[in-house]
Amino acid sequence: MNSMNGMDSLNLTTADTALLQDGTEDDAWVIETLRRYEPATMHTQHPVVWDRASGSHVYNREGRAWLDWTSGILTANAGHARPEVVDAIIGQARQGLLHAYMFPTRARARTVRALSELSGFPQSVLYTTGAEAVEGALKISSRYAAARRPGQPRDRRPVIVTFEGAFHGRTLGAQLSGGLSAQRDWAPELDEVFVRVPYPALGEAWSVEIIEAAVRETGAHPEDVSCVMGEIYQGSTLRRIDPESAATLRQWCSEHGALLIFDEIQSGFGRTGALFAYEHVDVRPDLLLVAKGLSGSLPISAVLIGDERFTKDVRPGELTSTHSGNPLSLAAAEANLALFADGKLVAEAAQRGRQLADGLANWVARLPQQRRIIGTMGMIAGVACTSEDGSLDSETSKRMAAECVARGLLVCVPSTLGGAMLKIMPPVTTTEAELAEALVHFNAAADAVQLS
Image 1 (cartoon, rainbow, N blue to C red):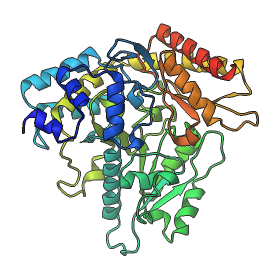
Image 2: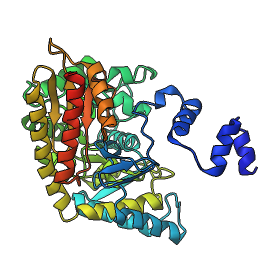
Image 3: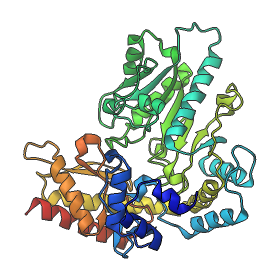
């Protein structure tokens, strides 16, 4: 079938076909075509048509620039289209190897070695998405638990402990692990092995007795827990884990033979002012989940494994995935990892994070009754507009996000917290001047909405 017949099979209009032929698709055509051929649920962000991106900026086809406070949702930590990453991808493509399944390649060998040298975790399993890494970690922990408890009755199934408010991805296992009930109400009743407990947030009373009580309520025992999985900061709420609670959790897992899993799919690779966010609480997990900032571009994720014993009883082939060793993604990851090797990007993230926190504090001080900081940690922050009674004002927050876009600043409005939070996630390579400029746009947008 030739390309035109293929286009005809999509029932494109004459105008659509003409645009496709002469390459003059404007932004309006892109938006309308996506709305026609995709479900509405896909269109959650402002209709800015990305044509290219570089460093801290995104550009449309006409050359208009936006300062990016999304990092492609925490992916472009080292900036968009880093020359080192682009060159590595092009070089791999020119080599003529675009896919290799799980057969050995130099790209895979170099990447897993670089991951180990950078992270200090001796082994890793590569995947494509964060949710896939979550699934892999659950499988590893369940196999490890089963091997340690031979002869366990069939009704004593391994229990997975996660936290309320957690988000671990959109696959079935990942959403059953999550603590956002609205995001798993589509799923079948398969969550009897998942126990969700309150998150041990900074400044809130919490004890591992909460885990033990919740496990016993299901008829299981603390010794049945295969893993405890959580985030150093919750992507959905930006609450941070209490360091003392994290240390207690580490001790409890070690005593009960459960694997401690930290999901750093959002927080890894300099985002929080440390290479990995767990460094802030000085608690090392057994399994560490990374993605997004791992390659800074193409789809790749990994489960970092703290001890070879954890995978000794996993059956051959159980952790494989068709595209996990994709040479292009691996080339991007290897080049991107090298950018973090000397620690300079992480130090920059810590410095810019302080500038961001100060700027947002000044933003609140200008109108304290109508503005709130949800949380900050390095180069990640969440803010919201509030009503007179102190409740979150989602409509004003959304209007403010639209005003930011109109003024040349891209921000993200997640669906969590009722759509009231503006999530701020600039590349960690954002310069002092770029961040200052973005804060000017941010303040102007807020004033235009709230003081009009």
